[in-house]
Length: 313
Image 1 (tube, one colour):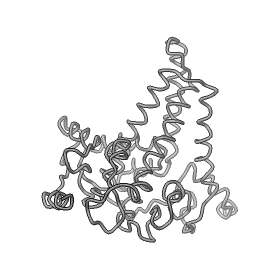
Image 2: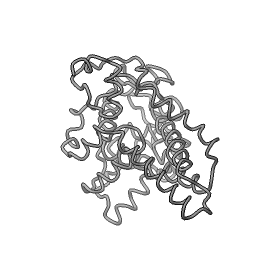
Image 3: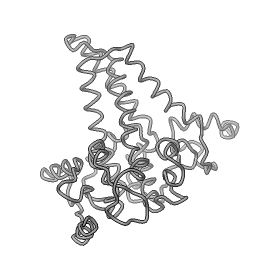
Image 4: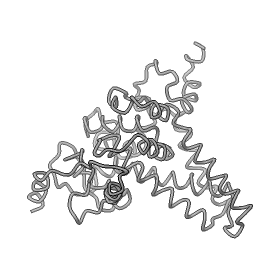
């Protein structure tokens, strides 16, 4: 057992399946960990599988539906709920959307939220692992999550949600949810091939479009807020970092592009502070509050809104 623990290659592979494997070891390097890059590269290369499987209406519907569903789970729950507690929900819905968010292959809810809390504490300083100001665009977009320093879940930052064993399970075995989605898509595709051949799809095609392509586009869309969201756009508020508001990114990410707003008042459930700033995640959360799925949505204080109006002239 000690031989395994002392073998970096073996431990890195084990962490693909159990994120706490070798948790007692030293993990402070901010250099590329190439073993951790492998699944990321494989996922991107698998997109070329579309040339083999072809495409169908069913596959495109699955691709788009799972992109938007998982984007909402990331923006509204991983971010606004787990990271910032900007509204409340019950334990069952908390788990459902944690599971859907986990299917995005962006690690577990505790890891994601804890890391994001650290980002807000150290935004655009040397301690911010994905600041484009400090480390450049490429690193802030997709290099930071490959280093050892970003791997562990900072449990001391997320004690409020770490008390739930089901969330700790999702966080520790964060590959299970994506694998579950792959299995569901494959099964659905095979069933359609057998019983609804008019859809002209199959299991492999549904996996390539519904998971692989959808997940790659989802990942790059999400992390534009880390990279482009700190270098491209307008600054309404004079925050201590370089956060920007960007309408295009807001549309792409269901409202996350109003990033300068967010860094001014992070605990609001709403990131599009004004009526003309489209924030689809907030609109959906508002609708969910009408039927009791979520409640106690935190508003933007009046003094912050007035500050923004003054700075806009």
